Length: 355
Ligand code: ZN
Ligand code: ZN
Image (cartoon, rainbow, N blue to C red; front, side, top):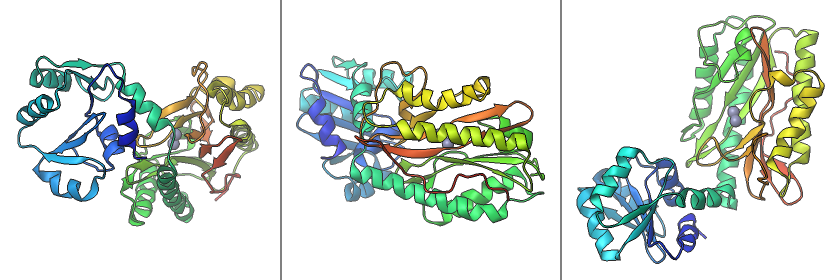
């Protein structure tokens, strides 16, 4: 069943329709990328509204929905609302700006725009990937791994972080991906202690750890991966920290399965790092869901409460240790949750490479 059909089934009896405006949720429902448009779905009908720039391509691509062209949304939307007899429409709280909400309210006088429900419905749908969606994520991950394999010979003393980031992006995009998943992180030496550092003009030096966090996008579906490599040489302490992160990462991967509390998934990695004495240097969550957004539900976090993992979710497992002003290590794979465990979608080696 298509995502739009699953959403239509879930519209509660006390509402007439769902209005989806955010780019990622529109794309999730239509499979079609556009900078403008709306999905309007009742229990019986699904419409994709968009303008002249997109309508031809939308009609060719979008399945299971009627594509409606508008010249002026403020004329078309009220007309449709009247025709469909809408009195209560579910809207997103997340991904809709206050300005958009006001605009829709102005266009639909007498229609109740109800927040608080739709984000949950969409979140629930997006939590479990269909086999087709999982295949897209795997395709994105394969391109990402191509990038990793081919960037390794490029990394050497004298290259700047920015050069490595650009080359890695070029390698991945040249393979035909729709785009990269996010601005790549390439940090080296002391900068590698910055979990989300920005690649700069710093040249890589012998003895540096280089951490690369990168991913691709295929038909809107993301991949996400991190590797840390050593350049030239590696101290005993660097190796100890690396091995600790790797053990933590494997520990978390070994416990993931449907029904596990997300917080336990996080704890499996966190405990290994704490026992090695680096607990205070691991300040982020162990993992996050990946899909039409690079960060989505579920979260493998100490703050995940009683939430449990579902079969079909795709999560990252990415513990790290960051020693301020010195160096850092993060290792990140993506895994697809099954009833009995998980399938690791990341095939690249993760034993410490000294280039
Ligand atoms: Zn990442
Ligand atoms: Zn990540």
